[in-house]
Amino acid sequence: MTHTENDHQKSDHMSWVEWINEALDRANGFYEVATINLKTILRQTTSKIIKELRFFISKLTVIDFFCGSLTIGTLSLASLFLVSGIGLVSYQAFLWIRDGVWSEYTITVLFNFVFKDTAVAQWLSNPESWFGLQKALEWLLQSIPLSVALIFPSITVLCGIIFISIAGLTFRYYQFKAKENI
Image (cartoon, rainbow, N blue to C red; front, side, top):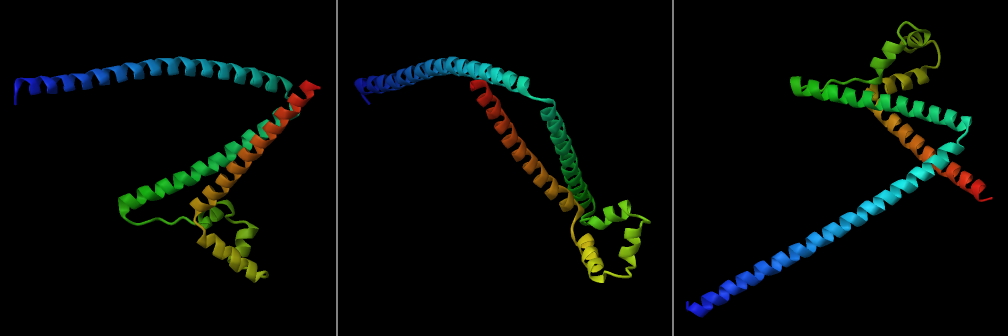
């Protein structure tokens, strides 16, 4: 390799380093401008959201707050059932990891706990009529896992309440906006 070829490779290397430094400088400049613009957009958006929330909340009535309280109560109860179902599955998984045997908990466990020594429990164990219904209920109680009976209905209720709440709040918001524009 001659002296000029070595100089040429160094200059190619240096041109690449300069090009990378220029690209990094441009990227840094873009990042700074983007950060400033995003902060401005975020500040304006937050200000607008706060203004609209103040408007919306100031227009709510006692009935709106009552319905909101019922909604929050329903969401809390459904969430409690969901957490209970997930907790039961976690407990079953813990027992399975420890013992190597999956513990089955059907609805029968809950039914026996809730309806112990009641007329319903006595009818279920020794029916005098409605034999087909007794067999169907007994099969359901022994077939459906308790965790499934806790998790799926609670997810359904949570999704339904959230959807209805969003639709109701949106409808109410546009009612208030329509009254304001009149």
